[in-house]
Each structure stands twice: as C-alpha cells, then as structure tokens.
Length: 220
Image (tube, rainbow, N blue to C red):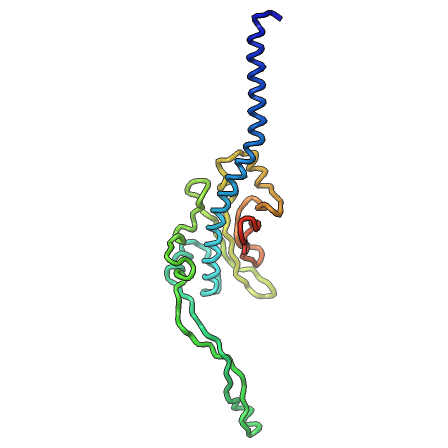
C-alpha cells in the first residue's frame, strides 16, 4: 500500500469506528430517552383523562347520561348542583290492613329528606378552573384535542349510558423516534398502555376505567 494512502485510510477507519460507536450509543440511549419522555407525557395526559371521567360521572349522576360534547360538559360543571339527601326509616299505619284486621297495623317506609345543594364545580375542582380546558391534550402535538363520545348500549333490555375519551399515542409522542413509536403502538403488556391510544371509558362495554397500568396511579 502506498504510504500516501495510509493517512487517508486511517481517517476513513476512524470515521467508520466513530459512526459505529455513535450508532451503538444511540441504540441504547434513544429507547431510554423515549421511555422517559413517554412516561412524563402519559402522566400529564392521564391527569386530564381523570378530570374528564370525574366530570362525566357527575354528569351521569345528575342527568342520568354522559355528555357527548366538551362544551356541554363544561356548561354542566359551571351550573349544576348535587342534591344532598338524608335517608331515614320510618313506619306508618297501613290503612288497608288496619281496616281488614280491625287493629292498628304498621308498615315500614323509607323517607328521603333533601338537606340542600352543593355545586358540582366546587365538589370536583374547588377553586381551579382547569376543567374549562380539559378538552385540550396537555402535551404532544400543539392544539390537539381529546376525542369524546357518549351514548347508550343495551344490556338485558336496558339502555345503559357509556362514554369514551381518548387520544392517540401518535399525537402524544408525535415528535419522537418513529420506529420506537410504531413499537409503542403495538404494546401488549401488563406494565404498558395497550393499544394505540390512552383512553378512559368505552363505547362497547359498561366501564369507566382507564387503560393505563397501576404504575401511573389508579385507573378507576
């Protein structure tokens, strides 16, 4: 080999070594950083999904159904009140049996007294007004919104209210490594978020749980 080519060859070899070293480093470092970013963003999204669920459960308690639009849900929180009641047992004369047997006969009844009312907003959010922006996905793609659906499903000839709020992982992690994002969308794991979205509730079955694991806190 001509001596003039040796320095060039050495440079090429060092470039190749450096490139391979960088690729090896990236193959280890990128998944670690991806998971850190994912966990932080998922935690923020889950906080919002919990707020949506709590608001929807209050809506069902007061109205008997879930809201299918965020604007209706926000208006409900601004204006609705829980009724505070007290349940007590009592007894009264059963007129029919008393007349039949010619002796005072009593029957048990339940009396429900209305004690007052409390604001849904104060009960759920205290002095915070974060519910007014709960339709906004707090991290990920700018200006992204949660998808919200509500309706009824039939079980044993009864119509039961259901709802679902969700956001795709592609939205939450839009700026992350695409190969790692594809893998995340295919996750099936006890410790991971299965499927391609973070969500709470379901339009196919009666449940109000979230689909995240306990590592992110309660999903109920």
